[in-house]
Length: 387
Image (cartoon, rainbow, N blue to C red; front, side, top):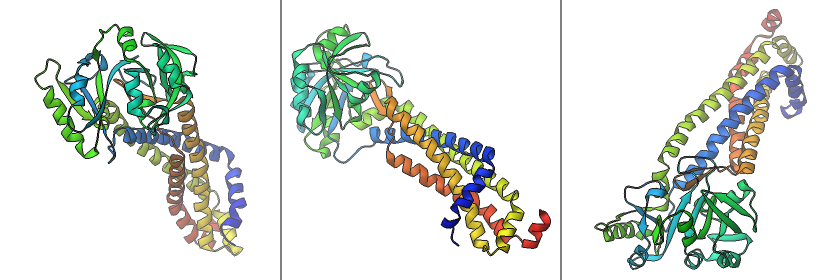
């Protein structure tokens, strides 16, 4: 007889101690919910800040400034930036946020020259930005029109033709966009002049410039050239790669997520303790039963495998419930960690669920090893006497 044929017996043993099994599964589910949530945040931080070989974007910001409200650069820097060798295109951006501090529900308005921005992103036909609802024509036609990131639209239940208010700005939703860049998921792109006036700023002042270079190998050199160009200007600049810029302004969030990894490890330790405790109690209550099984011809190896399988089933059931709940909440809530106009998404993918299940199965095996060894090596006669 093999272990698979004994699965009904294992399930019956779990069901016999219903309260203990349910409490164990509930504890595992809570721990895996927290672990999965932490891992989702960690994945989002990695995607938002880890540089790739094909990155070509630079962010030109006001030197020694952090919050978008304090970064003010003359819009006429654009022509000089475009003349720097290695620059393929540059777009001035005025950023207005509903909350400059770290929050889960921030609306970021980015005012851009519409024609220049569409050309830079290839508009609705490019690989970077795709308009999935509404139209670019409607966006170009209205001064107050906005192209809204898909995540922001989901979170605020926005559809083309609707209006919404945030940060003191009322905008008309002309379209919903989907983008490869995480920074486009929670933003609303509007006309540059509209955001400047709505934010009560003078025309001709922007927050930053988004610069694309012709070759990823030129990123560092172009950044140095831009900063050298404005080193003696009244408003000097600090230029970073997009991923480095996000890592710089979101340093507190990254540190918080790094600390949360320890919470995730603690959750795994809790799962191990819960499963081990449940199996030890189960084995102690069935000493005579295991002796009977061996008397009937069950090998010591099979008895050990039955105990380990019980741990695996308890761990995977609880882990599946907890991880699935975390993924469901992450998908339906469309939350992202936002700080100073940058966005760090909470990335919950199917691969995270699979990883959680593999971890739970491994924990189930580890938790059952010692009780399984003790049960399989115990003398049959001693088992009957202990009972």
